[in-house]
Length: 363
Ligand code: GRG
Image (cartoon, rainbow, N blue to C red; front, side):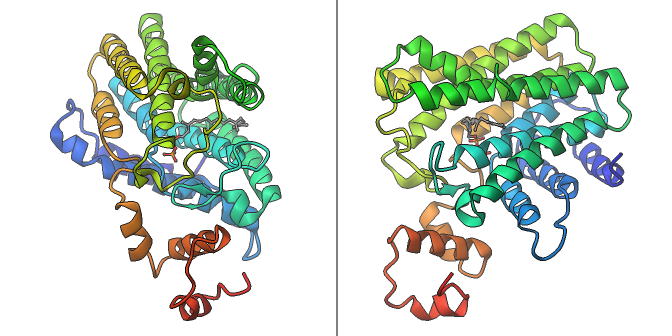
């Protein structure tokens, strides 16, 4: 078992009293995200030594500022169903690791070929394709290992949780969805095909998060059935949000490459922005309805969803250009500059000495 689980448990339980959701809780979302990040940092294998690129890539890629929507939902659905164990936090970290693995792979040149992710260079762009691939495999293995050894959960339950996680990734889940997107996405497709691809590549992890929360809380079949529908509706809504952001005209999504869907048969391309926005709202409403059926006492699930869907891509993050300038003394600055240099977007006049000072020349 992981030795620091008790510390994480205290933090988690402290901030989640047995009361229903309030505005205070929404404000404390940042704290909950921080707990997830702290625990992720503990659960990731420590870098072997100073030259361990895999270890460095795992920490950098996983802990880069993402929304953490899947672990947040897993935690809050579990709590709403009465599961208060600290092990839930570890399970939440496991699903975030799987998600991060999917991003490592998704960004690679043979897939979406993206260079910017979470406001930083994508893992393959910074560390190399070999590291991105090996890192993704390591994350999947780590996630399964965590689910298989959850503190205080019976062996049979742990085995089921591992199976749920693997099922979400495998040939019925993310892998199939990604394969279809890559191989069928450039031809025109009917809306149903696009939706079923989205279901596999995006809804699968939401379904796994809800199912793992429900299983660990010992929820009945009725609640689990409602959660399955909720997860699918939510996954669709989330993918549509992602597609809308990809073609957004404003630079609000500078945290990752945009226009990666150009020439791809997405629902936005097929149906147009207005129709897709309506569809998104319907999916979200359906998800909320089903969550209402499933959860006896919502401990913040709907509030988190509203926060995510109403806010800019990464809550609390400054507008991209401001972040770009104000991160001048942080690592982000280095990766941003590196990216700009690579994209030939940086006017080096006046920047040359800064680049030299931070050791970028020749990098
Ligand atoms: C073996 C794990 C594994 C995967 C292989 C590469 C692949 C198959 C699947 C890719 C699936 C994928 C990336 C789907 C897109 C889902 C999506 C909308 C991702 C963006 O998620 P956010 O917005 O990202 O939650 P942050 O950065 O906020 O965490």
